[in-house]
Image (cartoon, rainbow, N blue to C red; front, side, top):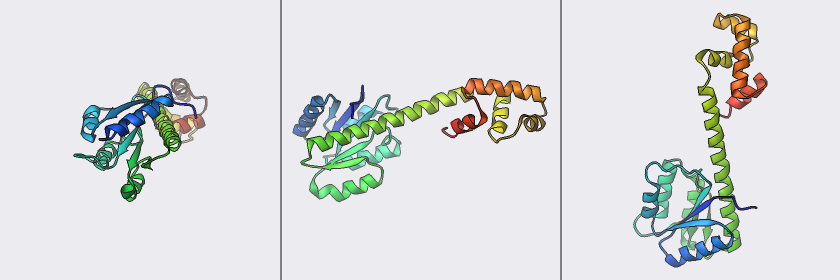
Length: 208
């Protein structure tokens, strides 16, 4: 698996030696990382309006003084960030059941200390791939919404009936306009939405 360009691995662990070891490991695999000594510091970095612009994931220690890794994870879930920035918990043996429960609630995975370097990097790269795919879907959906917003009200009316499978004559009857006018609006809708058929248009709109 090729490393994703411009991806970031966020390391959140109160143990400086763990942070340093992970940073070194990631550098050796050409992965960029940023380290944080506590959940509070990482949460403050995110702020209230953080939205990932590039692939990222979080290596998160379960047990830390102050805000625990689980408490931070709950905040990420509440904000819907755990999909865009998958969380891999770093856990001791005693915390494995807790980490398993977190995975059921949306964490990407957990790695038990001491962990295998190769296994951990493999999961990190998979988490970054998931993040990249999620961000790409969000970007595509945003572009699609922009195209829909650029349609006129009449074009949206025509589009709604076209994707229901109605022929131009029935669209014209429902909207009380001429068939020729429907044809013009239909052509404009296809052009603006960058599709060539009603089926392609319907499939595209299902992605919104």
